[in-house]
Amino acid sequence: MQLLLLISVISLVRISVAVPAARNGSCNCVCGVNGRSNRIVGGEETSAHEYPWLAGLFRQGKLYCGASVLTKNYLVTAAHCVNSFEPNEIRVYLGGHNIAKDYTELRRVKRIVDHEDFDIFTFNNDIALLELDKPLRYGPTIQPACLPDGSERDFTGSLGIVAGWGRIEERRPPSKTLRSVVVPIWSQQQCLEAGYGSKKISENMMCAGYHDGKKDACQGDSGGPMHKMGNAGSMEVIGVVSWGRGCARPNLPGIYTRIVNYLPWIHSKLNGECLCMPRDVAARSEQ
Image: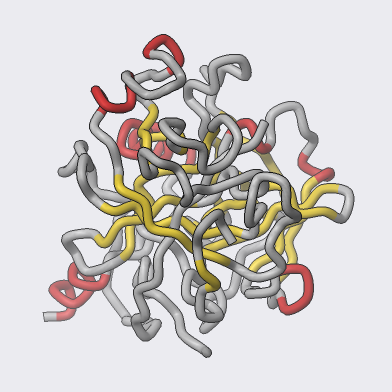
């Protein structure tokens, strides 16, 4: 099944700030700040390390899905990307722009934590965590993404930012370099009225895209993040690329797992693992 992904370009200098404490423990780091150094359907190539939390999942030597760094030990991805796989089948490439060539870290998967209620037929609850075999080292090319705090739950009309190494077009090969696209997020009513039919859309799903198509995520982008700039000044992962019909087809938007519905689940599965703070929260903590 071909799937979707969206991301944009917001160039901010990556910083590391010492802070006394963070949610789920004590961290000396800031999340969701873009790095700099100088494809997605209808998208554009990003600057190198612009989204340093992006990871590529490989199986049998080929990239097949994306993921996002949440902590030094955990990634978030789509359940359909790891369902029925054994951890030793997956390799995680991080810190790269041309991901297969210039990655800076390579990890194995220690444990797959897919959602207990994931339905492979409907893709409801399409979310999973991957525990890595050893902790990541944060630096210019690898940084954690922020999770939303849950205070905002309706993103209708916002622009979703998605990035990945998936197919550039429906019948073309995957992109060698990280690409991004910006797509508007639909209301739940618009989503129910899209070409999929209302029975296929659950409250755990978000639609994003253009009614005439043209820009979208595609096969290989699944599991990667949909972002939005949060109120605390950092990029937040508000969605996970889940499913769709084809790529960038009219009235068939990309479908994303709605992260805010799974915040309690994510925090419970992290087992107290440290989460970095958004930039503005970290700055206030220093005062």
